[in-house]
Length: 343
Ligand code: SAH
Image 1 (cartoon, protein in one colour):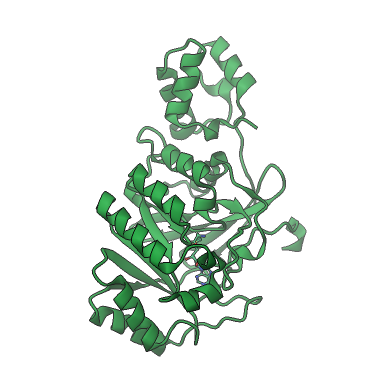
Image 2 (tube, rainbow, N blue to C red):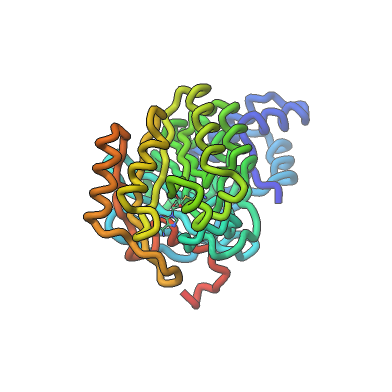
């Protein structure tokens, strides 16, 4: 499938140049697709007939099938079916600063983090850039409003689908297209070190978040299999390099799991680890799921953990809890292969 939504402006310019056309055609096509949102090449009325015919011959304009939505306060979860019948979810959150969309990057996930429901289905395939772009287009169409922020924190590991993810970011950031500001896009990784290095050198301006979840390898090894490959020190040293080269602040995500990583000693160890690094820590109250036995930390424990980080001058916030009633919260998304009637 050669979806037109896989093409960055530059890719389209190259295509038009290759068929002896002006590269300005790329801008025209972008406007039709991303400003006027047409669903067929025949509607691109400022293009010559011959050009429309060649677009029809060479590209498809696809969509995802919206299977169902579920809503809770300030959150709406979308279940989409892909062309091969696989399903993915995306979650829209209304914040006072705008609409933020959490997109999935893969069908399933190979990272196998023990606490995460989304990763219980092994990876079936990467999403194409077009399937990422379409999550944004379909949700904007549904809400008849703009999405201002995109977080790559749905199902999948973005850095295990690196090229498509970078293409997607390029497409949605195009100022004459969907135009989502680069600093309004956040990519979250469980810590695939070589890809963090590659990402550093691209200097995109995209926000980087690291799912750390433990202050030492002993605990991290137990809950995140990726830690057997890339240790905490490897992550910290490439994050330091990222900050040095990009001058950007990094976010560390830290889920608080009762009696696993949430005591005062862990908090102090985390503070020592991050001291002097230009970062902030996003503490995530664990969202319990019926299939996994980890428990959410008590409020007093969360508050104490927070206070210890604060006292050590670490920037820290506690993530607002959203959408757990409709299983739309972090780690609760699923890429089920079930049929509609089973939901
Ligand atoms: N694979 C990437 C992108 C997924 S982001 C990554 O690991 O960063 C989803 C975030 O939600 C991650 O920080 C993940 O660790 C966290 N998460 C997973 N399960 C969760 C749960 N049950 N409750 C709260 N957060 C969870």
